[in-house]
Amino acid sequence: MQSLHLETLLSTDQIRAKVQELATQIRADYGDSEILLLGVLKGSFHFLSDLSRLLYDISVVDFVQVSSYGAEKSSSGVVQIRKDLDTNIEGKDVLIVEDIVDTGTTLTHLRELLGTRKPRSLKVVALLSKPEARKHKTQVEYVGFEIPNEFVVGYGLDYGERFRNLPYIAILHED
Ligand code: IMP
Image 1 (cartoon, rainbow, N blue to C red):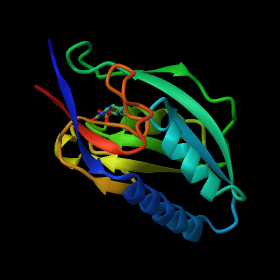
Image 2: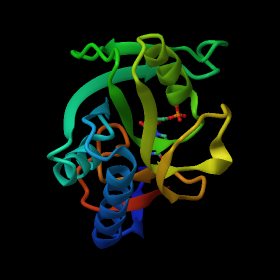
Image 3: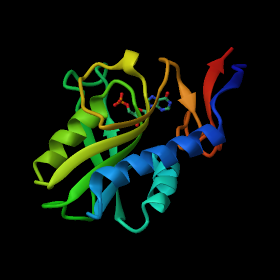
Image 4: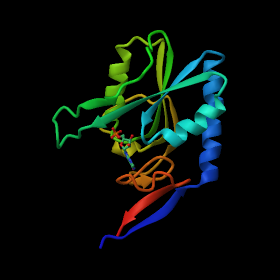
């Protein structure tokens, strides 16, 4: 039987401090303008929850859910919208909230799609980034941690829906 074990990569305290740092930076950049925090389901929900409470007085939230088809399933690597936003983003300051940027496929398509809806600004905050895994060059304005090219779980990130609610981030090893 396959056995899995977790190796802590980022502790709850490290994550908390980083989210605080990101919120301070975002506040400084946006001033008093209202920000639409757009969570990408499901992985971003813990991050969005913590970040949005630190920006409670200047933010509103909405969600989008996408499904990506990698190169093995489709040559175009198309990202499909499974749940669209409820908000009309025209003229708004939209900040996409992502758990992790891996190949960059999801963000590239999401940025393209949302860009056509004429927001006033469109930026991205990602808690994690794996620069070595990048296949599509995509802009990420705020990055929490750059991590090695390993599969990680916790704080929203799952492995077949498991480990999503772990309060820290761990590398998942399969023995
Ligand atoms: P990308 O389109 O390749 O950048 O992948 C983005 C999505 O893949 C993320 O939003 C996650 O849902 C998922 N993903 C990428 N790397 C990991 C990982 O290490 N653990 C869990 N999910 C991941």
